[in-house]
Length: 405
Image 1: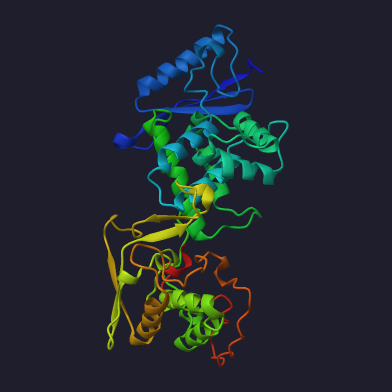
Image 2 (image 1 turned 90 degrees about the horizontal axis):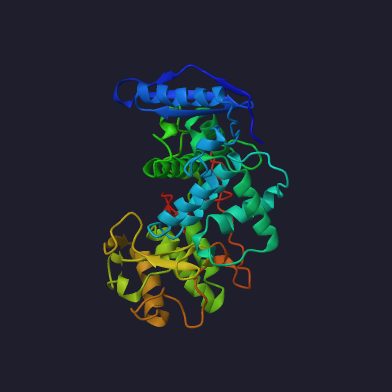
């Protein structure tokens, strides 16, 4: 409903030098709005137009903060619509798992930038609708279920305009949501950084489209949370533990021999799971004596059928953080070379593609890789070591890459 309750503040200068901006701030029916300009005359002219509209008796729209006669198409673009457009622009150039991560961050921000509109869906349904439908371009041509469609309609109605993000208080709402879990507890430092990065890039796209004059996050003081740069050596699997685990997995029959080689790749060669599933016989160089080597040329991250270009669970691509045709050579110790040589000679697929696995074996899945129908014998527990905490969830090697798909 339009309102005649209008309040204005003095123009405020933000920053100094060439990056200085002049902010016009006003409120309509108690709801504050602001807009920034690069030059003071532009800010003065905009404020004068608003005051002239008040003197002429024009009603203002509380949602946009503008007189009804001056509401433009740009002012009506909501954050929800902008976020959907952002995912479509970024989709083609993202790595297989990245669209999933981008969608998760946009769900958090979009919910934070929603008003209290009647008919709100359950939080679980709203998150599902935004994550699997709104921010997944692969589902654009699929008709959603009625419950999901109703949630998407509500999200579109309740979303704030992009122009409201000129106000740093509104930006802080989104950043605050990125810093918390669904339970309201502080999120991990890596999660905060990742979601903030997606939010920042989406705002940068708004600047590119002319919806915002500058990225408002740059005007907010924010200290990046600390993120561990190394793995705690106390929870890394020791060589003795690794040998016991690999031998236990190898007792699961034909499938177990394949899994034993797969996990040996992750431990001895520090491969990512996505690199291990694309290991070919031609990638292995295994001399009869001495060290061997692996020449990696491809990976296949598991993102899920709904998040890949071809509708497959995994999407093949080049190596992570490398050019598309770049390879990576890894030396492997003699202890693992013998295991890999036996597997590659006896059951590996030809070099036309695919991982080294016996005929008829299913491809390795994450996290269900160990579901093989039978449970291996429990290996003996290693002797306790004084001062080390329990390795309830140990890592396989001294790097973090083995946690990535």
